[in-house]
Structures are given as structure tokens and as C-alpha cells.
Amino acid sequence: MFSGLETELPKCISYRKMGVKHNAKQAKMSRTRTRGFAARFAEKLSFSVSLLKFSRLCRPPIFPKPTNACKIKAFMLQAGIVGLPNVGKSTLFNALTAQEAALAANYPFATIEPNVGVVAVPDERLEPLAKIVKTDVIVPATVEFVDIAGLVRGASKGEGLGNQFLANIRETDAVIQVVRCFDDDNIVHVEGSVDPVRDIETIQIELALADLASAEKRRDKATRAAKSGGDKDAKAELELLDKIQPVLEEGRPARAADLSDDEREIVKTWFFLSTKPTIYAANVDEATLADPDSNPYVQAVRTHAAAEKAEMVVICAQLEAELVALDASERTEYLKDLGLASSGVDRLIKSAYKMLGLMSFLTAGEKEVRAWTIPIGTKAPKAAGVIHTDIERGFIRAEIVGYEDLLACGSRKAASDKGLARLEGKEYIMQDGDVVDFRFNV
Image 1 (spheres, helix red, strand yellow):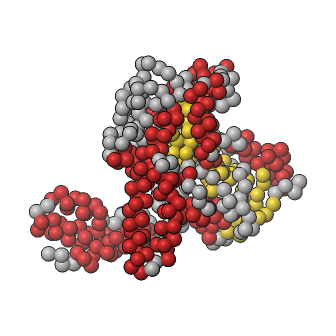
Image 2 (cartoon, rainbow, N blue to C red):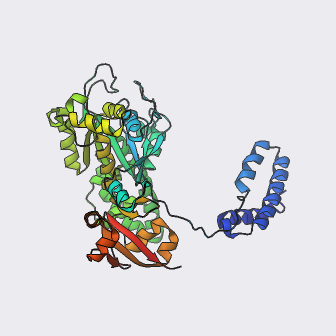
Image 3 (spheres, rainbow, N blue to C red):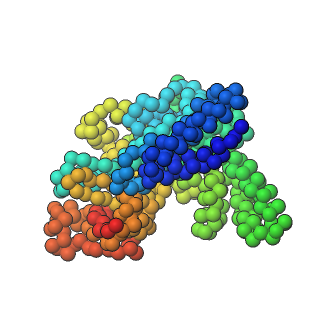
């Protein structure tokens, strides 16, 4: 029944992985043969639905003509917006992504499937830089936000739609927990009253309980490995679990455990929910924005965030969603009338970017001005690889001018004439705001 299929399928899959490097004629022949085998296989099993899925799985792509193009590395961080139902998550998501994609409704589980939006990181340096190099094309760095449905008590045990929500959180790099800090009798609170610290603890407990279940499974596996073969790694894992499990059993996040930097790096590979960096977004009404610290709910969230060494941003999600309808000048004027220098959304995006230890270096030319996202501490060749793998592979030098120096001089040539442009080698650690030209040879 399987004659030929077991030999043709590996070829087909390998062709798919090889991409444009493989001969298109061979790939076409393999595709034809594989489809034929799949058809005979499905016919014998009388399972026609599998034929379509199997053929699509196996068929290699239609290969384009070979080009000199090389794969470009993409870096996109993802932040999940979480909170109890009806605290303003979807309203905030709409404001962040300037769209009405998320269903903002006054009942629990208005969002079930996570909404995803790519948002530009506000960067005031790009427009002046574009004027210097005389280009109209500006490409900012971006963050991906995910609107995750509201958690409830018992989510770690599958209550509500808990398992699905927890899985969505696990896939993100950071968590933005929206906390309700306003009173409104017309908007139902799932707990019956407004208490931001209680709401924070509800989410934390559910994440901690989910992590505790994962930790117990890891402990069982590590215990068996340590007993059977004296596995040193298993013993080290058990010692690390001894530090984390008591914290989780108290309902506190795993990030609160007293761990060394090396231990934290190990725990990151376990993908615990409560180790993710967290920003608390205190969602207030418009009247509170002028003096947020006068709001006792905001004070409580600020104190809690400080104790955790977490970020905290005050926003009015409803106002931010309404600002989307205004043009840039009207938005600025309206914020000024409220006594605000920038929108809460801008502060939240920047906070998420900073919290994850990210920064931007800049490239500027007649074609475009662009901000590129890299982790803080990245060396020049790795930064070059974010633009294109060829540049990393053939890296020679990085010609760098600081943004402030370039802005003061008015051009790269003027900065160079004043000795403000410098050549840096492979060991140079990139700085936020470096304006770079990479020299390379491949």
C-alpha cells in the first residue's frame, strides 16, 4: 500500500526546506509523483478528506527563478493584553491598533479568539532624520499586541475558557495587565466591585497555579532521571524547582523567586506564565487623567507595581480609542488641553519596548529612514544581521554617527568633517539611536 511513498515523501519535504536552491524541474516531478502516491493511498483508505490535506502538506512550493535574494531576519516582539472581563482590554487594543477589530462589549468573554495587531513604536527621531536625508519613507520599529480574552477565577482549572486563554498568554513575550481603576454602575464588574489589587492577585494566582502544575510535572520527570542515572542536570533542575515551587504555592509569580541571572535564564526556557515581564495599565476615567495620583485605585496599583519592580502606566482606554478618530494636530491639541504631553498609548508602547530590554538603531538614506529593533547589548555584526544575513556574514565595519550629533551637524558629511563619525568593529556594542552604515563584503 505504501510502496514508493516512504521514499518520495522525504525527498518532497527536503525540497521544500531547500527553497530556491533546488532545481525547479526536479521539484515539479516530485510534486507530481507525491500527489499520485497520496491519491492512491487515500483511495485505499476510502478517506477522501485526508487526500486534500495530505497533498497540501506534501507538495513542495512552486519554485521561483533563482535570484540573489537572501533571507532577511525579522524581529517582532509580542505583548499580550490580559485582565478580568470588562476592564477595558479590547477598548485599549482598539486604541493601540487604531482599529475596531476587537469586539468591545459589556459582558464576559466578548473576546474569545485573540485579536492581533502590529503597532508602530513611537520614535520622535525618525521625522527629523527623514528631513536630513530628504526622504518621505519612514519605517518605525513595531510591536505586536494580542488582545487575550478575560481570565476568571478557576482559569487554571479550565473555568470559563481558561485553558485556551492561558495557552495564548504562554506564546507572548510580555504581559500588559489592564486593571480597572474607575467606578461606573453601567459597566458590570465580574467580581461585583472595583478593587484593582484584588483583580491583579486573581490573575497572578491563576497564572501561578498553572505554572505550579507545570513545575510539578517537571519535578516528577527530573526526580526519575536523578534516581535512575544520577543525571547532574536533573539534580540542578530539582534544586531550582525547590526555589520556585514555594513561591508558586503562595500564589505569587515565579519572577518573584530569589534567583541568580543564570537561573533566570534557565527558567525562561521553561516558558512559565508568571515569569513574563508585566506592565500594569491602570485604566481610569477621563476626569482622573489630570491628577491620577488623587485616585486611590491608581495609588494602590502604583504601590503594588513598585513592590514587584514592575512597570505601571496610567491610561484612559476609552479616551485613547476616541483619539484615534482625530488627526495628529487635533490629537496633540486635545492632549495639551488635558495637561498631557503624550498619549497613554504612546507611553504604554514605549514601556513595553523598554521592559523587554529592546532598543532601536537607525538607518537613513534617500530610499528610507528605518528603526531596527535589537536587544540591548547587541554587537554590531548581529545588528547588521537584523537588516540582512549577507551583511552579518560579510561584516567589515560599522560607520556610526550618534543621532544628536547628526541632527546638530545637518548631514553625515558634516558630522564626518567634524570627526563625529566613527568606524567600529565586530566587538562594538550598539547604542540606542546609533545612525549606522554597515560596510560588508560577500
